[in-house]
Amino acid sequence: MVHPAYRPLFETLLGCTPYPGTLNLKLDEDSARAWRRVMAELGPCTVYTPRWSSLSQVSVVEALVYGMIPAVIVEPRATKHPPGVIELVACRRLWELVEGNPVYVIAGCRLLNCWRVWLHEVGRLIARWKEGRVTLREPHG
Image (cartoon, rainbow, N blue to C red; front, side):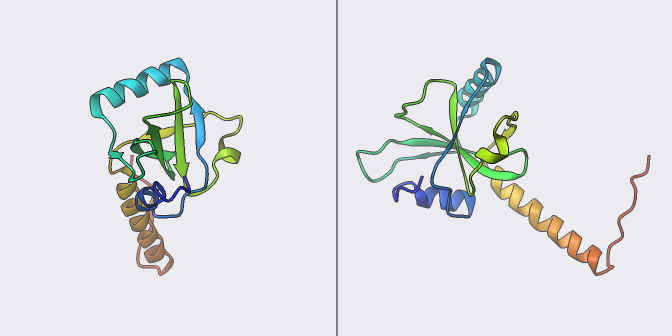
């Protein structure tokens, strides 16, 4: 992911310099079937063809790992991985977070932009709360 042909795409989508490797996830049969169905019906968010003719076109879907870590799912047209393996690109190394644990990924187009807006608004709310301009109450119910 540090190849100059792909890096600008990931920097734009993620808003950072991506970690120089991918996290490859082997999907269980149900997850692989669901992923194929989503890709068949909705397709990728972005299809990117690098200028270098020797490099593979990639399909990209925006994602949040565990609902909070921005990432992209990359499907190279030419891959050495068997079917049912997806590749995640993120700003940081994900292996330590997921090793030995189930991995939950939310995927969708324009997901990362929505996540950034949400994060910004939560930050503003916390700042206003610290200044005493907002009080947080228990929900009614």
